[in-house]
Length: 288
Image (cartoon, rainbow, N blue to C red; front, side, top):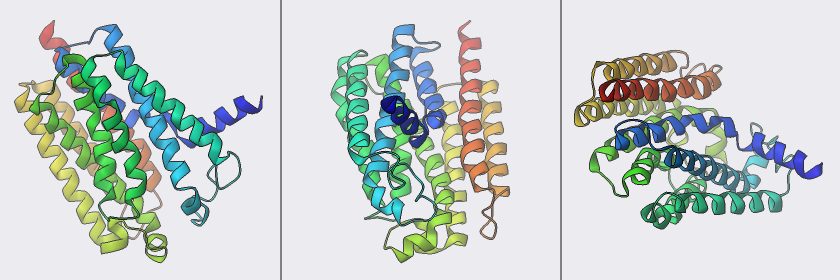
């Protein structure tokens, strides 16, 4: 029972339900590579890779940041600083998830297996970037942005530069909303010598940087539509993504961060799902 309780707390700690952020983009990459639905075998192992990689990354982040979380009032109730989980348990969970990720990557093709340690290195390295650079938001963006490129490789066994456009778009999208999220810790980060864009340039300027990043994301999505010769359904999806992003920017401001969680979790989950649904519909209608 104690182990089951620890697993339940771990799933809450890593917010496994937030896999929705990157998974739809990975599925988009897979469908673009396959010109429709991938083979069920490939689809299954891509999903396993996504869930285990993210679980390893989130658990490692909580392990690496345990001491920092303990001195931040916003995060002091997380599992490790609150004493709900031991650092050893979280470390073992991280290793297990990383091992399952590499095993799953090996079920796809040789290149995915060879690149799996590289993907893990990017995911785990992010946890230390806030200690050394204000641009940690871009590293987090890359951690999620590699999902569509990795899924393409899983299907094709090679990389096409066109899918890198989607990778960079996701990078800018994630970096933008992470800049928003970091605003709530700006003063704490300055006090404890941690780096972030809001702590460095101030919350008002950070909002402008987030806006620029999201405009760049939309421009890259439009370019991706052109590169893959997608149709009006995909374009409609990008228009809807733009509307959702606009709403996200309207419900928070430098003077009012009270709706930040709604912008961060709810809206961004919707954005990734909407994008996937419309691109998938476009591909499936064209291939039918």
